[in-house]
Image 1 (cartoon, rainbow, N blue to C red):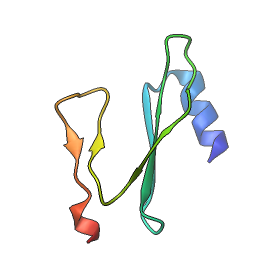
Image 2 (tube, one colour):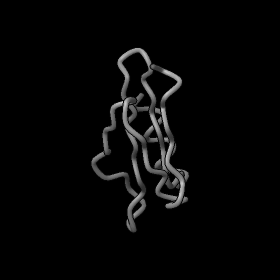
Image 3 (cartoon, rainbow, N blue to C red):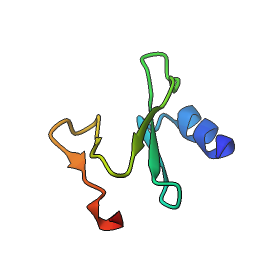
Image 4 (tube, rainbow, N blue to C red):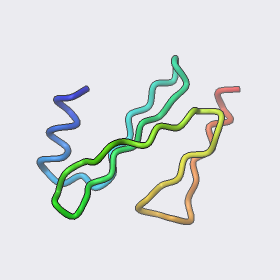
Length: 65
């Protein structure tokens, strides 16, 4: 988990999602102006998750109900 996050940060992946369906959460990292991931946002999969790169897009996780 940390190896992949560090690699994505190093190559400049602007938005990195880590989804854990069995525990019903998604963790979203956003690259800051200094090229580093800040503290991730954590969402439960019973709520919609916003996509920072596409502000008009929300991911609905209803398929898990």
